[in-house]
Length: 181
Image 1 (cartoon, rainbow, N blue to C red):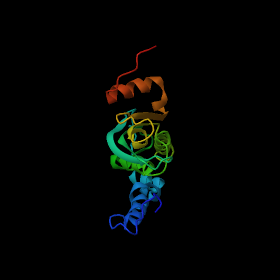
Image 2: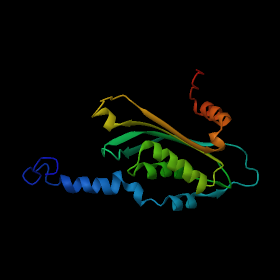
Image 3: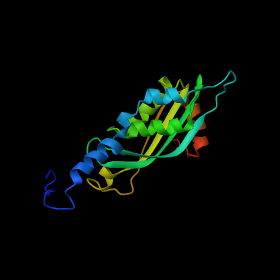
């Protein structure tokens, strides 16, 4: 009855409250159950003595998140990049990392920052980057009703936070640089 429809008298709605609770707890907000430290610790492989300044990039990682203000989904893709420090991280772990933070109640800007911070501290990266391109249903289905709007955020740290690395990363990702004003 929370949304004004009597679930006990409508057979289509009878199991809905329990279904919604299970979906939120086990799927949509399953990122709280992920131990990010353990995820990255299990993924570490020694770089070796000849580590260079190479960038590892994983693109087009499909993610879903929930807006903490409206509990409506945001869907899109993530791009994660890092410059290895003392260890290489598994590429699957990078996808799992962004998914773990996305499946928590968090703003898009915070998800990218959390990914970058985890790569720098837990992953021992020399540089880290996370770009999120998401369509938010709180923007498309309510309020401004902008169904084609895409929100893009970037977070970066370490060697990937310099202007030089920004150009290098943009070239690597095939992104156009903004013209100078």
